[in-house]
Amino acid sequence: RWSFGYQLNDSTVMGGGGTFTYDGGDTYTEHIEYHGESEVIGQSLTFSIELDSNTWHHVGTLALKEGNTTYDEIWERVK
Image (cartoon, rainbow, N blue to C red; front, top):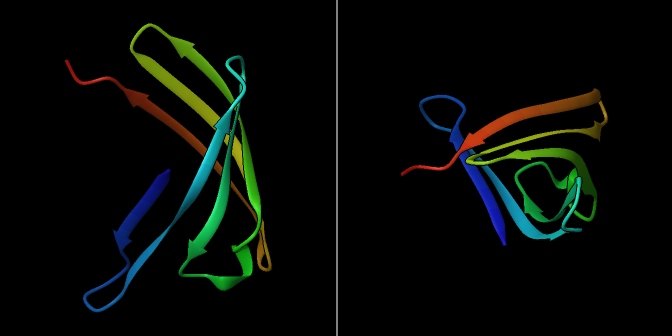
């Protein structure tokens, strides 16, 4: 499972989540089961990934009605 949440302003919180698959190589996919923006429910977001020791870097693009949104994230393992 994966999920996210963030506060947009003083009164609005956005969130979403679902399941994921990882091929053990360079592809990670999030399957969106719930989301504050109903248009993306049912979509999958496929990332290309690089894994280097304690750092995970992934890049993927999600199609939205107002245009594509690209996610480029770097996650580091906390020791």
